[in-house]
Structure formats: structure tokens, C-alpha cells
Length: 347
Ligand SMILES: [Fe+2]
Image 1: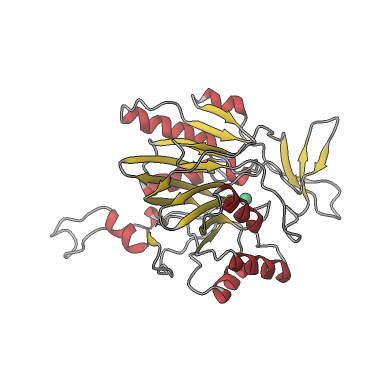
Image 2: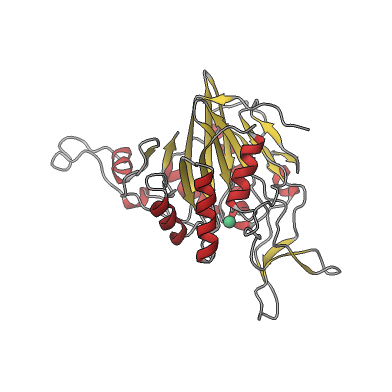
């Protein structure tokens, strides 16, 4: 069944609460994107100083107001159309303290988060989930908000554990367990399980189902495994069918797709978004492109295909890796906007 039509948004703002890299100095290389959160913004948002306090200094520029990078992803996304506005959190980063620290330093407006979508069951995306829910609940209490419970959009097949089992090791390296459905519900959230494409937030955003693997070179997570309990043990899980993208449409521009880790392949995810979006042009791709451990041929094929899709903006972050970003910049000059933690992007 075809998913319902997506609303076309007037604008979109994205705040990177968690990402792998920090660079609050480099200017935004693409004029189509408004980027804030640099050192000047941090300084001017800090404690204002009285005129006579420190020889006319405007504000105290504090190092403990700058976000810290962490291996994972968490994007606070707000879509606007006319006077309608909806806020989603795409992934929750790897650990509670990292999310809490950065959300506080950013003074992020988290009470309006309606949906938390987990891109896939991996701890670098799910690790902050329970703290996020606690903090959203607290922010809502403070504001006397009567919004309905946060909906946590999850793939139904939660693994007991996930990990990697590279050849030569006598056993797998296991990540910590993801939060359970029960733990999420115990914090008052509503668990929404789905492995099918569906829209959320009054058709402003779409969460995909399984991303079709089409390209020949995007083969999944190297050495990926998941644990099924004592009887079945660890099984290969390179394909990771639980990975789902998030997308929306921007008026006059095209599709914006968010990809958590691109274990399905960033090109497969982008092509699927175009398919789900009825063939609209691909405006922007944001998230982890998972090319940090890819060989040169894989990176080249990806860049060729992103070029063929005529992707206008690549907000590459998390697991993209510096070599792939360098290649995109080299071959598609001006289209790369590296996603740095603490940055706010307006499209
Ligand atoms: Fe990841």
C-alpha cells in the first residue's frame, strides 16, 4: 500500500544534539543552509556581563557551554508549515550523560518532542533514550504542558544484544542492550512498533519500512551479529533489516532524508526516499553515511551515485568518516555541509 502524501514543509530546523565531530569554528560552506551554534553564538548566548563588570566585555564565553562530541547520533528536527509545527527526535545518541549534557548546553527546547524515532537497534543511537524521556517529562511538567505522551517509533524486532564478530576473534564484541519496550513505557511513553512505511506528525514526516537493498556494493554492516538467546546464540546480521529512514518534503526544494547509520547503504536509503516521495528531487541527505571503514572503491561508487541523484546538500555526520567527506567535497564542491555536534541547521 502506498503511504499517504507528505505535506510540503515551508521550513525545517535541525539541531545536532549528538554527533561524532565538533568544529564550532568552520563557516558553513553552503549558502543554501543557515548554520548557527558556532563559538560566537555560544559566547553571545552565555552569561551577559554588566557594563562595568569586565571592561566592557559583552558576555562570558564559557568553555563548559560548548557541546561535546560522542560516537552516535541524535537530531532534534522541527518541521513548519504555515502555523503548524511538529518536533521529532531522530535517535538518542550513545549514552545518557552525553545527551543530557549537550541538550542542557544547547538549552534545547525538548518539551515539544512528539515522536522519538529510533533509526535502528544499535546502542550508539538508542543509548540516551531513557534519559531523553525523563528530561522531556520534566520539561513538560515545568511548562505545565498537557501534550499527549511521547510516541517512541521503533522497529518491532528488538535484539537481545547486537555486536560485531570480526574474523579471527573467538567470540563477538557485544554492545550494551538497547532500552526495552517495558522501560520505555514505564516512563509514560507510547511504544509504536512498525516495520512498514507510515507518516507521523499529521503527514509532515514519513518513517520508512525496510530499505530495499538495490546497489551491488552496499552490502551491510561488516561482521554485524545479533544475539538470540542461549539456544540460538549469535547469528550474522550484516543486513540489519530493522534500519528505517526518516524523510520529509520541503516546498520548492524536494526531499530531505535522515539516515541513522546507513547500514542499508546511503544510496539505497536515498533512492528509497525518492521512491517513497513519488519521484520528487532529492534535496538533502543528513546523518551517518557509514563510509568510515569503506574502501576507496566503495566510497567512489557512493559519491558517483549521490552525484547521479543530484543531491543538493549532504549533511554528512556520525559514521561518514573523513575520507568520504573529503571525496564528496572534491567531487561535488559546495554541496557538503559537515554535521557538527551543537550546530543548528535551517533548510
Ligand atoms: Fe551508528
